[in-house]
Image 1: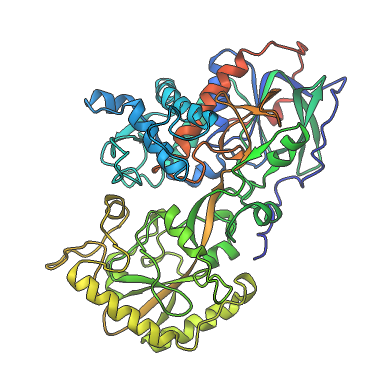
Image 2: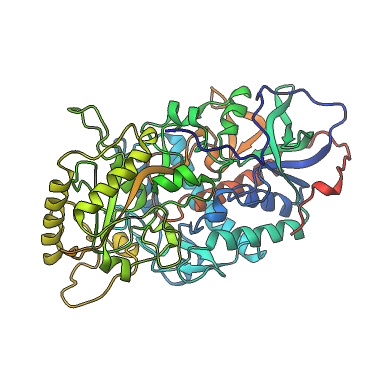
Length: 571
């Protein structure tokens, strides 16, 4: 698997070794925020609303990062609309739910911290305590106006520990009904608020290192793609919110526990903070975990900067098979769990047989389930269909799939169809069709959980459709296929932080002046993906807490330095 092409608009990475305080910095603010996405913009806004001068440095030439192309559901336990509807989301129930999923081998409901380490238990409580106040402040200031999504199910709504299976999701007021464009709307409104309220936004600056004075982080040095170098000092603190290491091949290869493909994160998410924080003495945790999602192999290889994961598998007369032509998974699993099925290790063959999965559908699904939202791969007329393979018969489809796989052998560990692929495929379809006729998937239980119905997408409704996620594939062509691999939405490991976003050293002591929020630091969720929006809801909570903690820091460097206005973004 090769690394995608670097973003030519961003400066190349330099040594992250810390610098000393310059005699003449280019700018000084109370708080310096690094990164302008779903963590950085809220952190900058919360800091500014506390009265702090804020400079925000963004590596790309626009704000938004990964969040811009996300749906931007945000998961807020015990949120205000939920409470106003008379629903209950008790803290003790919420804690059992998230602990059970995050650390399933440690979970013990009889223990004071539910069997998980105290620091993780405290992080769960911090989310419950701060996510709703943070969301309400963003809403009241017009930065992130929301509407409640009462019918959105948690991804694990059915387990005993989840006593509030619906109602924790909020979405931007102006997002369309499908909610697929929530990220663009959220970034737009937060950017407008940041400009309106005086956040000094500087685009195109890659922060290369911190500035350390007497053991304290007091600023950063950054470079532009054109080679301009600036030093920015922070009177109080620096808050990093630069995303994970999805697009750094070395970090991904050395830390992730499965051969994940680079995925949907902004192309600038290259793990900068992992290296920068290491020089400041930070310890890391959860480096083996990522937010996962199936992705189109061809789109990941050919156009990674605009890649969107396949959050929803479209169609009912559709199934996945591996290179042996065998169905091995529930295609309608929530995307994080579905992606993990791609990395099943075959100890007999010493291979990942599911590394490349093949989605196959018929004309019925093509006519009734075509949709590109949420990364669905059945394209409607006029949409990009370069990833689609077709055949008038299953035999012809098999030949065309083999040809397409040959094109990407260097990206797939030489994956090729087995000699008996066609026979196995025909058998897999016949077995699937029997299940679809009966409405019960005896092998993988497709359609048995609420979240699978929520993500099913449009299908043709007709008599006998007892399981909306399944319908027999036609016994005649044409047939269609697409190649899928398991990728990252982004990684979720990095420097360890406390409940206020302070980055911790090897003794779990806060490193003075250094904060981190979002996917650039270790997620409190560990291995779990609790629900839709359970990335962004907690990130907003910790941005809120980090801003308050940074505001309380004693101010230093009271120099009045103002840089040229041509660096400031105007919306």
